[in-house]
Image 1 (tube, rainbow, N blue to C red):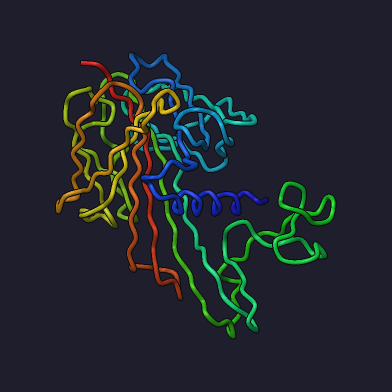
Image 2 (tube, one colour):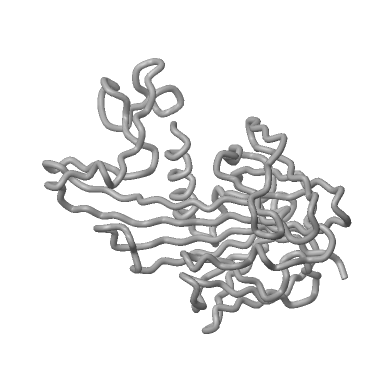
Length: 297
């Protein structure tokens, strides 16, 4: 599968998971979030799993992950490797301030019909030529001829003028983490005013158990009121209950979270609207995900 196809699939998969359900979740897990001086390195795991931060499903993709230095300029991902259940990479924190690490994905998914036959846009693509029918693919894809390769997914450019029942949805997602070397800074939080974004009031690398934190969410640069946000602690594998909470942003787009205990938390916000920019698309689905470290007082 081509890199762009994998990115579209990842974005669509993330947006299709109800935040409150125990399902496959994409996450980035740093070895720490607060470092002293500029001689430190952070190691990051990237994976998709059922239990948060436990390696039980598949690795995350490294081709879409970027690094932003504290001044907002591009940084460098080093020592990247992908195994069976996780990908891992390092970032050298050689400048003081807060760094951003993560991915920003967008695409279009949906369907249309030609002569009564439904075709899919985005997602996993179609069967290889001669595979013998719908749903057949190469090895690991549910059948098909040996060695056959699944065809790249269709794009909106592949929709013919005579297509009927066109149903298209724009998707966008951000999955980011923040690590600080020395004193925290805020340049990496400057919004782009595109889609769903995280604009924290409380710095995400200054979270303490028992204290309230305030995070503002924006949609196209404006306060995102009424956004549903899931906050879930890691370590569910060792608990009977997931321990997650479903919260909602206020009219000012602000979410208030009080942390019951120290540890790593997965925060996921999702929303939909109809403010699309793609011709013939009728819905826009947006998601924002981050991993936050909460320290003891």
